[in-house]
Image 1 (cartoon, rainbow, N blue to C red):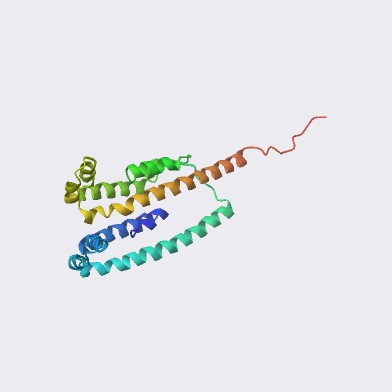
Image 2 (tube, rainbow, N blue to C red):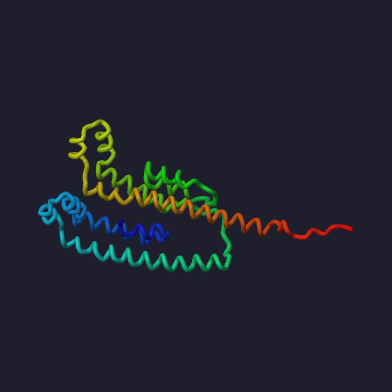
Length: 221
């Protein structure tokens, strides 16, 4: 949907941030969103006039690299995950870091989705995905401001549709399109997987610290 989002799902933040920032710069300079909008509405001549091919062709390698590299990284991480499962690797349930306290706990995935629907990034904040949450919140606030998104929502609710169309900036508004589905999907999947990880850690803790109930107890004669 947008170069770099696949890396954010995998927790590869540096690559994800670099690709997203690069793609946004190229998109803005090439007027890709405007051309995309004109193309969808059948105004092909307007799309040709507004697109800047000096920047447009830079978007293609970014998109291809993002798809190929995130796929390769996913395959490699799946292998490590399988190996860790077979080796019964230790799971750290609690960690105190310099910027926050992280701990494992069960959470409701639909609550995470609801927070993300209200504002992208809040669902990740609910699930303790701090870097992703910070970036999504920054991206959403900045893009919504430049797109005049909130005033457009206000005018739409007031029934002033003509003013909404005149005020909103489609070249920035289209950046909001991939944020919502990504945010809801990612926080839902992460919450489900974290809940599974919590169950595994709890099971391992009980096995390591409590006696098997089928242990034959010695009975005095």
